[in-house]
Length: 627
Ligand code: C2E
Ligand code: MG
Ligand code: MG
Figure (cartoon, rainbow, N blue to C red):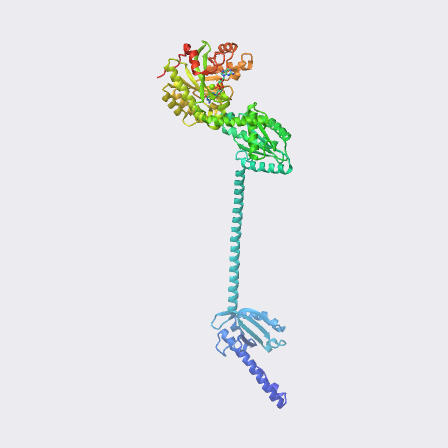
């Protein structure tokens, strides 16, 4: 570095000069020390050459100590062109006296380079080239590297955070989906637990809750609440004859109509089968219940168009009212149920309130049900026999076994009263078995005494007909009694036959292959056509009493009976007219070629010994003798 102390000294007085000289030397030594020990590179150029550089400068650029001074400026740049470009950028700024800061690659002597932060400043801005330039150079490779590393680490961190955030967001979304799914499933389960699957109406459980609520409200307000029990008349017949799919569709349609009758605050529920219950809240009393029941009778009885059928069902309705008929849900429900039974007993398609009379009847019914359980074991059941007559020859050809219950206190109870009860409770199975065994035993006993009443017809309920391996158990009962299959006929009703399943045909075929003849009872009350019967191995048709009652006067009935007889004859079936009570009927039936008649005109049902006494002399001849 070049200063001109001599010139300065010449202008000062000797003493002061000495002082100044000392102070200058000190200053020089200080600057020298600063330069020598600076940890950054400091260089001084003039006329595009290095004039002086400190040790750090040379060390950074890889020049041995003292070798850079005198070298041209471009030696520290990677090319002359770069040197020129830097000069073009820095020169004008320096000329304006500005301090120039920039970063650039600096060339080391060994050909390598490093990144440097450079600060350049003219020593004398008025003569930038003449006065020379100071270059302060700092190796920022490490610094840059660590900044880079920091940036990379930061970027990586950012990426990680982003990835993690995305993963979390995904997990969060999955969790939300799962929660939503679970909530939907729980809602479904809750709905299923409280609703009927077929109709979607509240089920028994939810009904109980709503009823409790309605009762709570009524208690608080001192008002009423009403329970309306609805049962569809003869729904079972439709279900049995047209199949469950039609039955289900009908129940759904009924449910829709029920909800139409509903008022705000009411609940309608399906209790199972064809039973529905309405709870009228909002302090509904007997008058409201009457109004709603009237609407129900009207609205539920309109025809239903279902898969090509126009179906009619009517409701029987029972009503109980809080607090008059009961204080709690159970009592009110069972009393509305009892009132509904009463409505059925009074001819169906009507509504009845719970009354003391209903109470007595339902208690009796319950008692009857209990007593029926032990009736077989106690030997209270017996069979009466009603003969069938050939209409041309007026001869006794067969007999129908009809069950009776000899009740210890109530006397003789008709099957119309206890067979439906037996069917409801499942008791029909042991009872039906007993009937067949007893009829076979009686047939055998008669044969042994030489009395041949022709075949004995035994009624089978729909449930019995559908029990597993009917033919097997019938066969073994016949075998045990030691009589031929031809000695027994089985009567099934038209609606039982029409239950559209492969099982019906299979059961009939199995019975036919045993040699047992099948009769269709109560024919005409169902929906079957005669052509439909062709599919089944049946032998005999019994025209229902309701068609026979008013012939020949009622021309509609006369036409029906004539048509059934004609068509049955053409299908090779024998025809029996049920409920023959007068000679006019007989003459008409003879005229149209009906084969047989059964009815009070010929003989009512009677005990076995009476039948034997009255008809032993004219015993049927068509029946084979006992084995
Ligand atoms: P069903 O099989 O149609 O039997 C004929 C019914 O008509 C009998 O009634 C009989 O007494 C009645 N009857 C016969 N002739 C006349 C007549 O001229 N005029 C009138 N008004 N009625 C007549 P019952 O004995 O009361 O039986 C009623 C129904 O109970 C039977 O109708 C049958 O469906 C059922 N039943 C009877 N015994 C049994 C049985 O052992 N098992 C099953 N599952 N059902 C039975
Ligand atoms: Mg019968
Ligand atoms: Mg009948």
